[in-house]
Image (cartoon, rainbow over all chains, first blue to last red):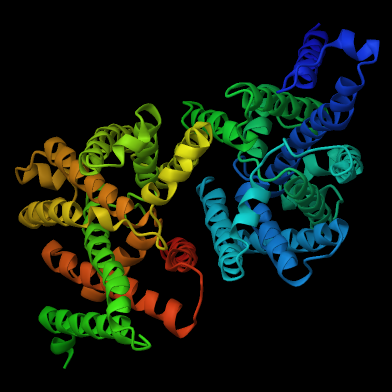
Length: 315
Length: 321
């Protein structure tokens, strides 16, 4: 029963996302073959909705994996240096290979994101933290350092505007022909699903993992690589979307606990639904103009995050 | 010899010399003969740096005594984001262009007043919630900053684009875009607040012992906290209005002052801290602009160093505490 209601909610949201926007589109006209409406529908609406669904799912799954890998509820790619080091990679690519193809740019950005995240994991291994919030806090500061290096280069070579506009999370530029790279995250999500048992076990700690006969370091490395790659792809395709990777997995794990195989699909769909809602708000609140979706996520997400932090029952 | 090194006047003199030398360097280096032009351009920055340096160090040191914590700064808790938000909101709901005219000083004062009210509420809420949990407090501060910045961006995006364009350069200050129209009023506000803190500094010395001890010694903590928070948020407001948000300046300056001055006497800390802040700003700008010939604003260099310093301090305290 619950599942049916949930599916219905998702369908309604997808419907809303497909038909909300500056140019009114009706199903009737589409079926009747109004070519202009069909064009808009096929080149912008469908790609946009698909990338919203994929991005929401990917970011929440990335957050979920990061939280298991670090055994910390408040770590996500955004608070572990992944996003910021990817940003640094993007600036470096803009500087040295301005005409490189998108795949190459993504690859370099991925390398940076991967290295940055590993560096962060290495750093927190030094600190047997008694306080759970210390690790995300250091992660944010760590990210700030990478971010300011990126800003430094961007200023130096007049790329600041380019970088800010590019990395502001925004789906209004998603169009047929320039968003297809986002599909690359789908196989990553599949791998995550196949490795769900392993990630759950890693989430119980190094000792237990080794006792159960798994290679801790190896699984951790795979997890980090998946997170870095998926996160970089989303960053390049739609930009930075704050907090999603922290709030969605936490909201789910409050109710459904931590067994990844059970919660993976729910986490993914909740992430998609949340992002769809935010994007519909972003499109309708000052219609016919648009607010970047990252701003809406920033407002709603930080409110949710704050209430999670200040809950009586700690996570 | 050791006594000499520890003596406060000598340290002040050393700092003063550093400040003066860096001022002279900053003002005169490579003017290419265009002395008047360079002077008018650079002296504006110089005034801003002096004002911001004083405001930041007084505000941060007081704040850290108030919270008994050397990690917290008003900027890390998001008070500068609050200033920007209040300012944007005022311009959003009233006709912005009119406000830019003759009444800009009045608007400035109004912004500061509203910001003070909200920041006192905010600080009270935060300090009550996270009294014993520093990391919670810091995390909440960071998220709050994101929240406030997102709302600000939202209002800016929702504004009429033409209006926004006109407002942007005049309103949103940064190191590259210093708001010199506010110099006189900012100087007056800072002077008044600094004098107030100067007279309160003996009370601050007592507060440094701890809340319970201070209460025992006859200090009315709630009313002191309130008045100090008002002063701190006004100082941060003024500083943000002049050069925009700089998250880590206060953190760096306060912590260097504790090490260098090595005392709990707030008067000495205030003087030392202000001089250190001014020196860091002017010398930093000189190095960045003239020696390395960078386009990068000093603020991003400060963020970089501050971030490293912050992580280093967390790790250091972890290992030794």
